[in-house]
Image (cartoon, rainbow, N blue to C red; front, side):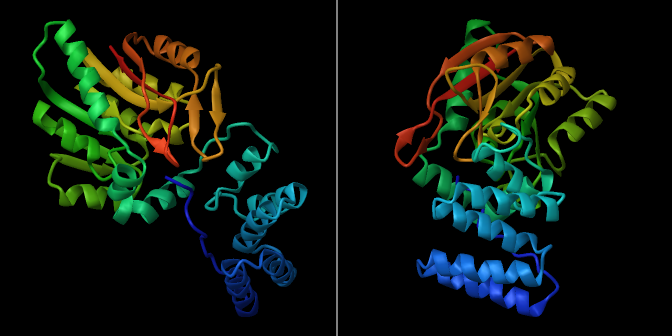
Length: 311
């Protein structure tokens, strides 16, 4: 899935807003130089217009003006403290600032709310996404090796989205709970009538609340979720506290050949295998299955991925 389209947040100045929309028209027609000139006029009228600064950064980047793009994205970041636009990610992609900054909740929520209506088709038809099927296969193999029945009294779908993973795992669980940050995604999941309970919440906050209640799950899954989370330690530790004795934590990540966390050009995170093993160990978990297999493609090219089952 690509980054979201332009977010329009009014500057409060009607003339500046009109100039911004005029600039987008020029960009749509392929006149990026003209669009950049109009956007410069726009931010001169409204210096705190984060949307216009962000658009200017994107257009300068398109024109090959890295220095100018960084300057504009910095202005967008400074005018947009909650980072609705994702300026910090763009700066990191261009090599300015942190190498893999966390995505802000408003940015992630907007990303998925915007894509909710076409999310399923985008992943399965255009990106050859098969995360849920691969996760289920990995879980089945671990359970078979342990000579345990393929049954879970309670299961949690972390970052459930529209319910693609829920559909794959529903037959295996008596109780299926889903949680996601984006209200529009949760609403789409609800229409499928797969879940016994759906919650709109920050993932780690939800896990901490569940642990405080003494809730236990036999299986927690996260399919194509951690590509939007840079630091996996807090969520992994929180999941470990929720797992019943013998419980499993199954998830997918995009990966790279080194260690640590990288922000990719797609504005998704890739986690190195050594990093993942450390995070699991610190949470008191061990890898029962650690498979290198492409979960999805990007422009027809398989993406390096890992399918992990921890106990």
